Each structure stands twice: as structure tokens, then as C-alpha cells.
Image (cartoon, rainbow, N blue to C red; front, side, top):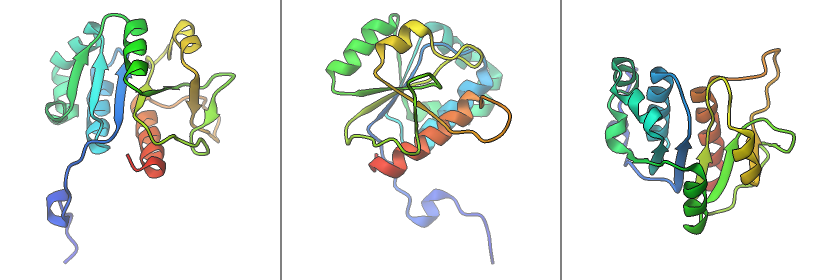
Length: 170
């Protein structure tokens, strides 16, 4: 019989990847819930949020979409993206902005170093600020082949985490 299995039925053992996610700004509780589900699926160690983003976690929409995955990921607050950026770099993280810019590289051909990665994702409509992008050396984008020039932030994160985990064994 072909039945859908759960992870524990095939010997799945939860692991934590060398991945940290940074979310400086977001407006949709549903997107945040999806982000937590995707982050949990790829074993993200921790998610850094601003207080404004953390407030979205109180929403019923977040709770329905996240399916309680926020319980399995360390969630930390930050006030200053500059201070957090410095702290993450000092801790040996490779900072990566997921944003289409003039200097961004295709994520599917980028060579990830075997080190901790701090992936920074932007607001649904505005992306990452120009000021923040200037402070981050590595910008990666997802090639798209249709007419639309953007993806939903949670969908983009899923693609990015898949590419990172595929290459770097995180």
C-alpha cells in the first residue's frame, strides 16, 4: 500500500544546520509562519527578529501557518541590524543577503564556504534596505524565467535553504 509517511517512520533524526536566519522587517503573519515552517524543515538553528516582526507571532494566522514550528527554533530579538551584523561576523558567520541587486550572484551557482551562514531576508514589498545591502558583501538571487520579477519571501527562503543545504551539507 502506498501511504504517506511521517519523518519518524523513515528514520528521520532532527538536526540543526549551521544556519541562522535574520528578518529585519516583515508585515505578513502568514509569511512569518511559512518562514518558520521552512526554517524548521531545513534545521535552521536560530531566527533573529525585530520586535515588530515578533509581534506577528501573536496572530492566529501565524499560529495556523507555522504549525508550532517556532517551538523548535531558537528565536532571538535584536534592536540594531548594525550591531547584529557585527556580532554575527565576529562569531564567524558568512553574511548573505537574499536580494536581487546589481552585484548579486545566482544562488544555484554560488560556492558556499563550509562555515556558519547568516541568511538575511527582506520585507515582502521593499526587500532589504539599500543601507543594509551596502554592509553585506555577498548578495544572492534566484534566477527566474517568467515575466514576474519577484517571488514570495517564504518561497524564496525555501529555494535558498534548499540550495544552501544541497551544496554545503549544513
